[in-house]
Image (tube, rainbow over all chains, first blue to last red):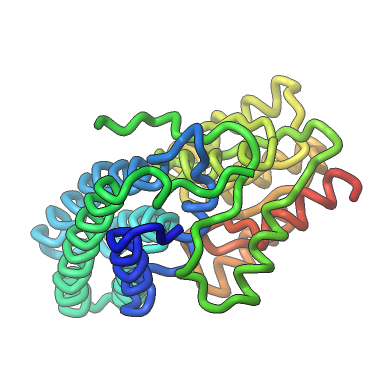
Length: 150
Length: 160
């Protein structure tokens, strides 16, 4: 896979996403669904995730502006968001989602608010890192990202 | 590039990129999971209110050659089953619009449907697990649905 310096850089960047806890094994499962016929599958999936989950983020933000908190609704939104996030292997985002849901279950509004701020930070950070990764992957060329053909 | 909703790749899952796996042994195991050949035509119904999750799970099932139909709410799933359509596998989320996953599962089982049902959900609490199992799913899976969990089930359904 590492045929050139850029390929090596790409591999290092990719590994750091796992080492720093941004991604978990589910991301690798997505990569394994990528093939020659769909060489950009992972990037498309991630793009769809950010587009789709933006609506949930907005719903949660709006729900947190309404007092008193409707913890059941907040929990439902976060349940959906957690499901999506876990499907792309967004490890830190998923962890914050789990914590948020625990605060919903215990009716801790301050905990929900605080955790949601942290979740948005992780969500945005991951987005930036993945955008940079996919940009480098495009520059590195298709052989550096598509799975090996069978 | 506008992402399309039909992201399910054709054909079987291939081996992944080098690197990134926690260790070499796990990578080798993952490659083995990817070499799945189903002898029979298997069909699956996917019930998930989240469009993104439906896309991922359909992609995974189709990568293993499973013909998959997806609906986005519990009532649609119940009506589809009631119409006589049969599936080898039903993958159903707990939190669904219109009719939730627990009630949809109960109604599907009440119709005498005995196919394998996987309750796949973002929930991770024991009481939710117990409720879903009590409603009638055979297996409770915290999302994401992964090959490690899915492949043995597909092999079992395929009679391997």
